[in-house]
Amino acid sequence: MPADFNGTWNFMNSDNFEGYMLALGIDFATRKIAKMLKPQKVIKQEGDSFSIHTTSTFRSYFVQFKIGEEFEEDNKGLDHRKCKSVVTWDNDKLVCVQTGDKKNRGWTHWIEGDELYLELRCEDQVCKQVYKRA
Ligand code: ECB
Image (tube, rainbow, N blue to C red; front, top):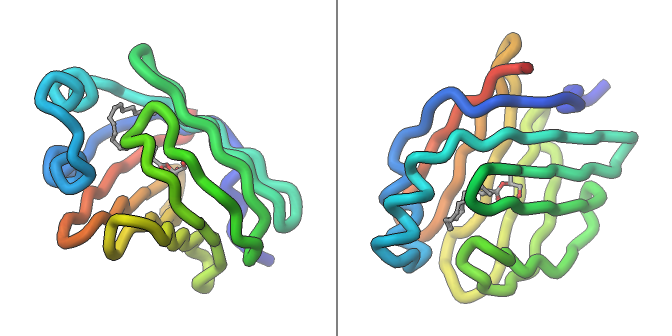
């Protein structure tokens, strides 16, 4: 049985979001606003199909995918760079590799108790975020 990510998750804290945004080339004004946000994630998981809705007062982002199936990601409202993404299981962790202009781009999600963890990677930067079950 894989981990169950279903649910609504509220942002608690983050580490090095600034470094991650700099690696993506996000401009100063956008970074200032973005780092104040407390996004909410709604994750729907049905077998190998997932959707992740990340919403905030400033911008929101939606992605859906099936485990192991490559898809085009547009990163609309984020850095807008297109990439080819694929998400796989690494034991109970969800691992996304985002292949495109940026090296070493991707993310990993896992659950510990009632907390959802997200590690965002771009080039040499790693941002870690923690969400709590709503
Ligand atoms: C969507 C809420 C954050 C909006 C931040 C606005 C501007 C900053 C622009 C670019 C920064 C790059 C990413 C923002 C960080 C998080 C957004 C979604 C990250 C993500 O890929 O989540 C995955 C895993 O949950 C699903 O898309």
